[in-house]
Image 1 (cartoon, rainbow, N blue to C red):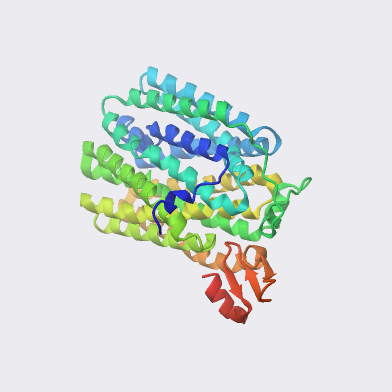
Image 2: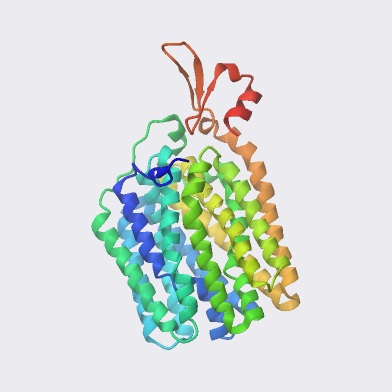
Amino acid sequence: MKKLTIFQQYRGLRRENYVLFFGNIVTNMGSMVWPMMTLILDQKMGLSAGNIALLLMAGSILCMPASLLGGKLADKINKKKIILVGDIVSITCFIICGLIPLSYVTIGLIMLASVFQSIEGPAYSALIADITPTADREKAYSLLYLGANIGLMVSPTLSGILFNNYLWLAFLISAFAIGCSTLLIWFLVRDIEPVKEESEEAVYQKAREGTSVWRVLLDNKAVLLFTVIVALYYAAYNQFNFLMPLEMGHIHGDNGALIFGTVTSLNCIIVVIFTPLFTGWFKKLRETGKMVVGRSLLIAGYLLFILLLGFIPVYYAAIILFTWGEIFNTLAEGPYESKRVPSSHRGRLTSVLGVAQGILLALFNLVVGKVYDASGSVGAWAIVLGAAGLSLVLAVFLIGLDRKKYPKLYFAKEEKDDKTGAVSVVFQHGRLCSQEDFPMARMIKKCIF
């Protein structure tokens, strides 16, 4: 890849994309609380793994109707206002948490902030899809993800340092950071009109007014399977914030929070380095292929961590593999969903899919926590690897189903060269296959893969 082209690939997006990018940087620079929730409940509140899972499940249950409400609002009213209201409530909750002693009231306020962030989540996701043309959507999601992790490079390590004696300060820093991001969005995000597209690959995004979200889902069986695949992936992936810090805390004691903080910071550094690289290097690999690669790397990272548990340098090697898998999944997930659902239902579909994933995650964490308390880490990690493996198998199956359901994302149209008369098939990402590449099997091999 030539010099500077890594970052030049992000040129040409709308101003709002860049505002959201910088907003994500600022917000996540102050993300001090969420990475440490398990350790707060474990070491500060003295809860068992099973009770931690129950409390986290209760929080997830509270967020489900909030997400559904947020999705409905996102399709009906101004998305920017939804985001601003959610941020203001979160800021208020974190300020109060920083000013009062740590107690169950603090946990309640954190959950309240989480509820309002769940309300704004579908609006945020739908806004990115609305303002970005289909051809640039992977770049837009990549840029947003990059911004989040630039901010997260420092905050987990800093929160690990503050954890033992200055946890109150972490809450106030989080409130300040979210406040800065809110001001950026308030003053600089102005044009939120959806992009109008007439291209072949945008045909599946046409609005379907008067159709229920359940009808849309039943008509999109590949999206339903995608939901199951993503839910299983996140059930396994989220053990990075549940089972992994528990293991580090129990093995390394008071140093567990600091070690986990540095591992999380490395996760963010790897994201910042490799997200633009992978976006450019693998732009021809379709979303379904990225899902398969991402899940394979997730499993490899967990296996390395489990097999050499207790040997600190291995944690950093494992997180590199884990993070590569995370990047591939992020580059696939947002673009896949936004290209295959009607623009009129983006908010509601995002919330419904999020609730389905949240239910599975809450139940999964509960089972993992109970197994961990009863029989230790071996049984718990076996369940995690089983979920990740099933997600990988289903992702492979999705490749064939997706081609049948959304053929225009694979075979857009034929074009004829006026000078030579040669006929070419134009694919989604712009790759050309001449008529000489037929029959179909040879064309698929050369042009899709």
